[in-house]
Length: 145
Picture 1: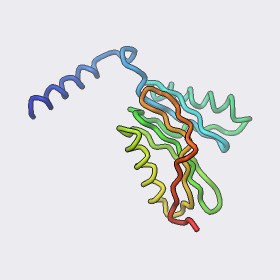
Picture 2 (picture 1 turned 135 degrees about the vertical axis):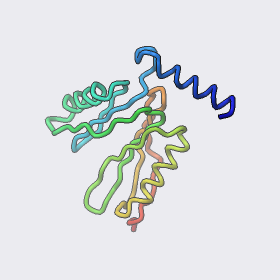
Picture 3 (picture 1 turned 180 degrees about the vertical axis):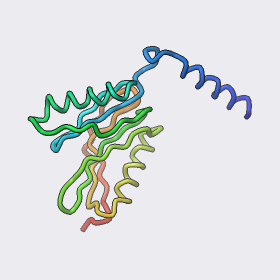
Picture 4 (picture 1 turned 90 degrees about the horizontal axis):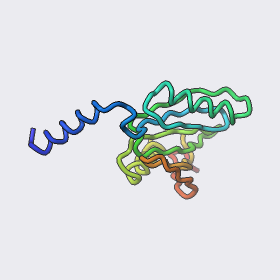
Protein backbone atom coordinates (compact mmCIF):
# COMPACT_ATOMS: atom_id res chain seq x y z
CA UNK A 1 0.00 0.00 0.00
CA UNK A 2 1.38 3.44 -0.87
CA UNK A 3 1.89 5.92 1.97
CA UNK A 4 -1.06 8.08 0.88
CA UNK A 5 -3.30 4.99 0.80
CA UNK A 6 -2.04 3.98 4.21
CA UNK A 7 -2.88 7.43 5.59
CA UNK A 8 -6.38 7.24 4.14
CA UNK A 9 -6.86 3.74 5.58
CA UNK A 10 -5.70 4.84 9.03
CA UNK A 11 -7.89 7.96 8.85
CA UNK A 12 -10.92 5.87 7.93
CA UNK A 13 -10.20 3.38 10.73
CA UNK A 14 -9.93 6.21 13.27
CA UNK A 15 -13.18 7.74 12.01
CA UNK A 16 -14.95 4.43 12.56
CA UNK A 17 -13.78 4.43 16.19
CA UNK A 18 -15.56 7.70 16.96
CA UNK A 19 -18.88 7.41 18.78
CA UNK A 20 -21.88 7.77 16.47
CA UNK A 21 -22.79 11.13 18.00
CA UNK A 22 -19.41 12.56 17.00
CA UNK A 23 -20.20 12.19 13.29
CA UNK A 24 -22.84 13.85 11.15
CA UNK A 25 -25.87 11.70 10.31
CA UNK A 26 -24.72 9.78 7.25
CA UNK A 27 -27.58 7.35 6.71
CA UNK A 28 -30.94 7.87 5.11
CA UNK A 29 -34.04 5.75 5.49
CA UNK A 30 -37.21 5.75 3.41
CA UNK A 31 -40.81 4.73 3.90
CA UNK A 32 -43.39 4.66 1.12
CA UNK A 33 -47.15 4.58 0.74
CA UNK A 34 -49.22 4.52 -2.42
CA UNK A 35 -49.17 8.30 -2.68
CA UNK A 36 -45.74 9.30 -1.44
CA UNK A 37 -42.26 8.77 -0.07
CA UNK A 38 -40.92 10.04 3.26
CA UNK A 39 -37.40 9.97 4.64
CA UNK A 40 -35.29 10.68 7.71
CA UNK A 41 -31.55 11.04 8.18
CA UNK A 42 -29.68 9.21 10.94
CA UNK A 43 -26.99 6.70 11.77
CA UNK A 44 -29.12 3.90 13.22
CA UNK A 45 -30.99 1.94 10.51
CA UNK A 46 -33.92 0.84 12.68
CA UNK A 47 -34.49 4.25 14.27
CA UNK A 48 -34.11 6.07 10.94
CA UNK A 49 -36.50 3.75 9.08
CA UNK A 50 -39.00 4.00 11.95
CA UNK A 51 -38.75 7.80 11.80
CA UNK A 52 -39.54 7.74 8.06
CA UNK A 53 -42.48 5.38 8.66
CA UNK A 54 -43.86 7.68 11.41
CA UNK A 55 -43.74 10.62 8.97
CA UNK A 56 -45.49 8.48 6.37
CA UNK A 57 -48.22 7.40 8.79
CA UNK A 58 -48.78 11.01 9.86
CA UNK A 59 -49.05 12.37 6.31
CA UNK A 60 -50.39 9.56 4.10
CA UNK A 61 -54.07 9.83 4.95
CA UNK A 62 -54.38 6.34 6.42
CA UNK A 63 -52.54 4.48 3.67
CA UNK A 64 -50.29 1.56 4.53
CA UNK A 65 -46.69 2.68 5.04
CA UNK A 66 -43.72 0.43 4.37
CA UNK A 67 -40.06 0.86 5.31
CA UNK A 68 -38.47 0.49 1.90
CA UNK A 69 -34.82 1.48 1.83
CA UNK A 70 -31.82 2.24 4.06
CA UNK A 71 -28.60 3.71 2.69
CA UNK A 72 -25.35 4.28 4.50
CA UNK A 73 -23.69 6.50 3.49
CA UNK A 74 -26.44 8.59 1.95
CA UNK A 75 -24.07 10.93 0.11
CA UNK A 76 -25.99 12.27 -2.92
CA UNK A 77 -29.49 10.74 -3.06
CA UNK A 78 -32.15 11.04 -5.76
CA UNK A 79 -35.81 10.11 -6.08
CA UNK A 80 -37.33 9.49 -9.49
CA UNK A 81 -40.79 8.58 -10.72
CA UNK A 82 -40.63 5.75 -13.25
CA UNK A 83 -43.65 5.64 -15.53
CA UNK A 84 -44.63 2.23 -16.80
CA UNK A 85 -47.43 1.39 -19.26
CA UNK A 86 -50.04 0.79 -16.53
CA UNK A 87 -48.73 2.52 -13.40
CA UNK A 88 -45.77 4.36 -11.93
CA UNK A 89 -43.32 3.79 -9.10
CA UNK A 90 -40.85 5.83 -7.11
CA UNK A 91 -37.26 4.64 -7.29
CA UNK A 92 -34.50 5.76 -4.96
CA UNK A 93 -30.79 5.86 -5.71
CA UNK A 94 -28.38 6.83 -2.97
CA UNK A 95 -24.68 6.85 -2.20
CA UNK A 96 -23.51 8.73 -5.29
CA UNK A 97 -20.23 10.64 -4.91
CA UNK A 98 -21.53 13.73 -6.77
CA UNK A 99 -24.69 15.25 -8.21
CA UNK A 100 -23.40 14.49 -11.69
CA UNK A 101 -22.83 10.82 -10.83
CA UNK A 102 -26.29 10.63 -9.25
CA UNK A 103 -27.96 12.05 -12.36
CA UNK A 104 -26.01 9.64 -14.59
CA UNK A 105 -27.02 6.74 -12.36
CA UNK A 106 -30.69 7.71 -12.46
CA UNK A 107 -30.53 8.03 -16.25
CA UNK A 108 -28.96 4.55 -16.52
CA UNK A 109 -31.58 3.15 -14.13
CA UNK A 110 -34.32 4.45 -16.43
CA UNK A 111 -32.61 3.28 -19.62
CA UNK A 112 -32.17 -0.23 -18.25
CA UNK A 113 -35.77 -0.60 -17.09
CA UNK A 114 -37.20 -2.34 -20.15
CA UNK A 115 -40.79 -1.36 -19.23
CA UNK A 116 -40.19 2.34 -18.50
CA UNK A 117 -41.84 4.88 -20.76
CA UNK A 118 -40.51 7.98 -18.99
CA UNK A 119 -38.62 8.83 -15.81
CA UNK A 120 -38.78 12.11 -13.90
CA UNK A 121 -36.36 13.05 -11.15
CA UNK A 122 -38.30 14.98 -8.52
CA UNK A 123 -35.98 15.26 -5.52
CA UNK A 124 -32.25 15.37 -4.91
CA UNK A 125 -30.76 15.40 -1.40
CA UNK A 126 -27.15 16.47 -0.95
CA UNK A 127 -24.71 14.94 1.57
CA UNK A 128 -25.57 17.63 4.14
CA UNK A 129 -29.28 16.79 3.87
CA UNK A 130 -30.34 19.82 1.82
CA UNK A 131 -33.32 19.07 -0.46
CA UNK A 132 -33.56 20.25 -4.06
CA UNK A 133 -36.99 19.92 -5.66
CA UNK A 134 -36.43 19.06 -9.30
CA UNK A 135 -38.82 19.51 -12.20
CA UNK A 136 -36.60 19.63 -15.27
CA UNK A 137 -34.66 16.33 -15.23
CA UNK A 138 -36.52 13.78 -17.34
CA UNK A 139 -35.40 10.73 -19.28
CA UNK A 140 -37.13 8.72 -22.00
CA UNK A 141 -37.47 5.05 -21.20
CA UNK A 142 -37.11 2.14 -23.63
CA UNK A 143 -40.93 1.83 -23.98
CA UNK A 144 -41.38 5.52 -24.87
CA UNK A 145 -43.62 6.05 -27.86
